[in-house]
Amino acid sequence: MENINNVELLGYLASVMVAISLMMKDIIWLRWINFIGCALFTVYGYAIDAWPVAGMNAFVACINIYHLTKIYHGKFTQAQTA
Image 1 (cartoon, rainbow, N blue to C red):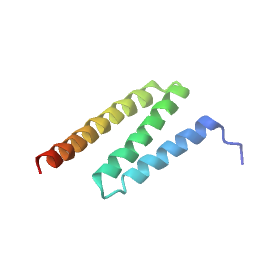
Image 2 (image 1 turned 90 degrees about the vertical axis):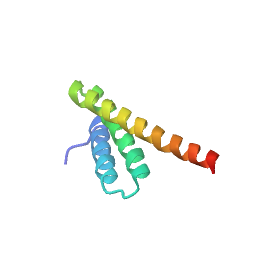
Image 3 (image 1 turned 120 degrees about the vertical axis):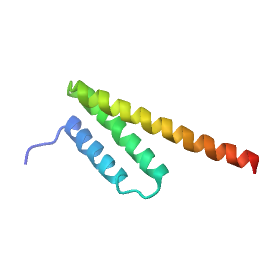
């Protein structure tokens, strides 16, 4: 078997993270793990000069951050009013 270089390993790790995120029942865990996977895919896409991969995953990572911010802001607001 050939040696796997670090960039290839990064791509596999990103794939595993995204796959794991899709098995989560808790939406917060799904968003966090998917964010990590997308961030890794963004770095991977940049490393192999695959700009569509980097751009799309950066966009999805931003969507995850947006939704996580909404979730945590809602929990903070509910805690203050309770």
